[in-house]
Amino acid sequence: MNRKIEMYRDRANWNEEPRRFVEGKIRELEAYENFQRVLEELDKASWSIPKGFSQQSVREDRDSS
Image (cartoon, rainbow, N blue to C red; front, side, top):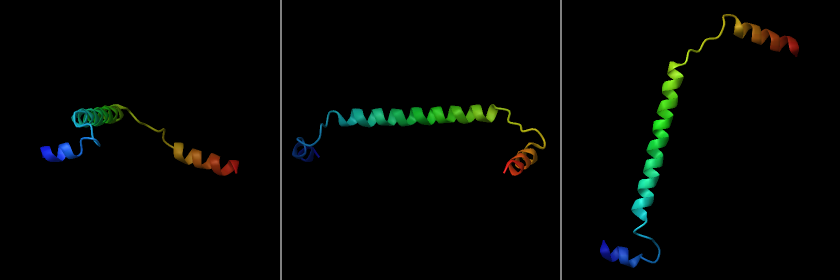
């Protein structure tokens, strides 16, 4: 492996590669955690639509055409 690292030394910054990988993985994990938090908040939210809302909306839309 050391030979290959030496062979490609001019095309890759080998010291920087692990840092980039770790930074990318951290961003990925943070995004996942944020997404999970959003899903939890959505689950807690009380969603309700008044009875007859859909019928009324369709009727209004139909009548306005």
